[in-house]
Image (cartoon, rainbow, N blue to C red; front, top):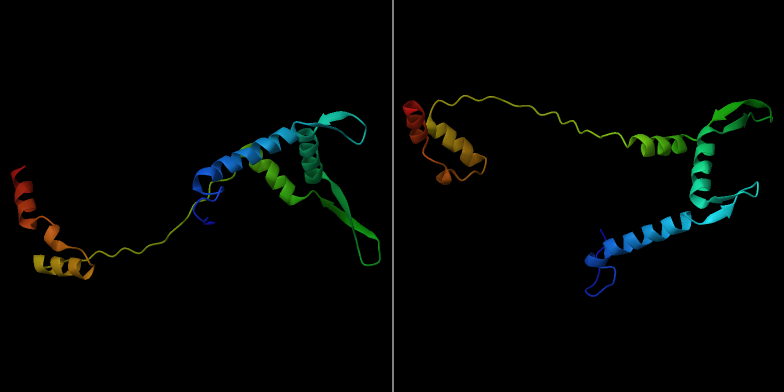
Length: 139
């Protein structure tokens, strides 16, 4: 994250507005019209999308070291991924964490208290365990 000196126009409050202004300008220019290779007037957005689709499906010949055509590459994978991400949304990323849990048996209340102290817990703030046991017996 970039930090700014106090009073900088791109400080915390105006960063969002700056991004919004850039987005509005981009949309404005994409809505402008330009002529394609056939002289037909189309929006720049249309031309950008058409170029992306063309890159995703184009067939590019592949040559060997002697200049002989040996096959065809089918489409640009980055363009294909961009199209699917836009249409279907990016796949949800999951994080997997493997943890080992151990079950310990304690013989006395003092063993439990010493374990909690070793873990850095303030045992003086915990309710006395005998009160909890007595409460469970009553209800």
